[in-house]
Length: 419
Ligand SMILES: *Cc1c(COP(=O)(O)O)cnc(C)c1O
Image (cartoon, rainbow, N blue to C red; front, top):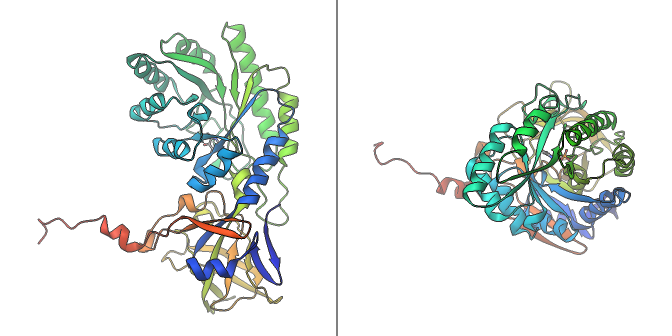
């Protein structure tokens, strides 16, 4: 459920008609709904009602906008961060250091030190040398790092290969079979409090089965680690729950996910940690765009919009589908390919799709663009960096400015030794 609805034939974000944002801010622009964001955060938290001890850390890589993070901080969410930059964002947004989990396969020593200095709640160790480095840094600072070991449970998440992370051949975590020995060695190191394990098998999962299989493997690992004398108090179950991108998509609901988790983990006696991203933010945003041209094509016309792959990369990167609807639909339909202005054939949002009939000057949105949207934007083709707007009832504010191509250019220089 979201708060992007038609009123008198015009698409609104909460109480704001989208043409007003297009006029005042320009296009392309991301538009987020605070009410939708809060609702999703609440629904996910409610779904975990039956879990006695838990911690929810929003995977901020999917939408690190400070305004968005502040909304979630007020909902009691912590953050799952994957870089020093994200760590600073979580703190700047008002999340408590204690509520921050540091994931990521390539943390630098500087980032490990930064996490310690900031007093974050937990490091998710991706492999043994990282744990050794964290121990050394913590000892030098006379501190103790709370950590869990990320394991790779070797299950097929059944999602797009580029967002699958839990197969043996993926770069993430340590093989679950080698985990007990690595855990033993890391536990013996000074400055490191190894308190549990973590996993995250992929994103946009549309079935609970791979998650359940992975959790069961991790449950057996927890029992093995305890049998070996370790105190296991935390298990981080990662994120990955899918969202509907097409009307016919039917991913598991947070409630179904919560029930499965409660059933599988009922005897674990740990604090369960969650790292949801897309399921919280995906449906809270749209990318508002204007149709520039409608150009005849070999079979069907091309609708050329002013948003491009640099603003919303998912279709080019993962062949992802985003619904495209007119802000003022006429009721007529057309079959067209939707493309952006970037000089790449990959700059295609949809091929030969039935869409609302649109003409040059019409406004339209790509839906479900609140996760892995603006955060992946670039300035490719010397385009501006796309701005973001947050709507709250009948008011809105620009939560990220458009960064003009000229501003980017101003950070470059021509060497004076090239004459
Ligand atoms: C990306 C990521 C997530 C969030 O994934 P979603 O599919 O957006 O829920 C959670 N944990 C880790 C470690 C990640 O890399």
